[in-house]
Image 1 (cartoon, helix red, strand yellow):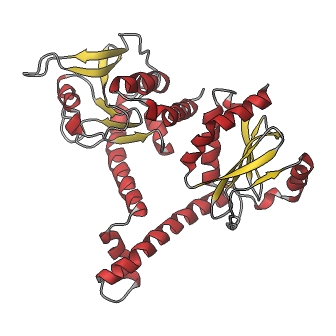
Image 2 (image 1 turned 120 degrees about the vertical axis):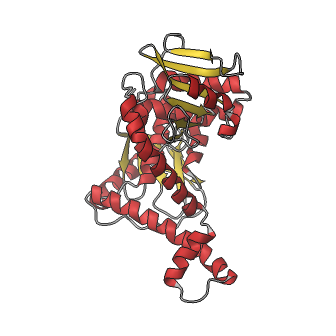
Length: 367
């Protein structure tokens, strides 16, 4: 599999299994070791590449251990400290990582709970690990812009100089992006005041703050969605994105082959734009079923009313339908009689909840 596909497969595993892990050791075995082997590309069973329970004397601290040391060209290049999945990642709870960084040749330190990975280096002072990470990877919310930087940390592409040179920009750009994301999710008083003062001439009183807080939040979300849609429309040569349609309750209906053919004929491709949410949902479904079929066999075919996820690009082998062109999103699942049940979702992550049904559908088509 390609690097991004391996990353998606591991993300799918984390999403499905994290609630079952009760200990740090289980987290290491289920998530961290696969990350080291399938994503970074190191042989976890070769002590010349991966040293578990790495020990070094640090001042008065004797016999302290770090969970993993990654070796490249005979030199320790990375240190990894693990926590139980779901645990907060704070340097206050990773003192060994901080101390070991100062007494080894490692320039990269990783603090992880199996779901999130914080990557550190020594930008602020030589041989002293920074307090803030230069790269934050969340397997359940992967930032695609970070994938090329993550690839540089893999065994075959390891480029320490390039990593360090890019770390400064990554560190601050990442922090700014997370700060902006936090404001979009829950705007602070300063954020609300900043925009209110540009559109409202009166005093910024408590009543005005309460009035404008939801307005600023709504405007921010709409602006973000419009920017995404405009980018997609430009990339696909379309002038606009189809408007959202009103949605009703979950429904079940029988779709015949004739109806499918008529829909395909009626719906011209000229005005169709595949949205970012549809592409994300498609990739989630591909990750879910990748243990059943090769991911290259899973494709999508977009239409005005829904985006179909297909096996072998065959509309008789519909894995799921994404009814996203409306105010509420629905995932349509078809049984063996082509009866479709639409399930309303509030977040794309909820698609993982249909994993068993999606795999059963693929198994049915795949014999």
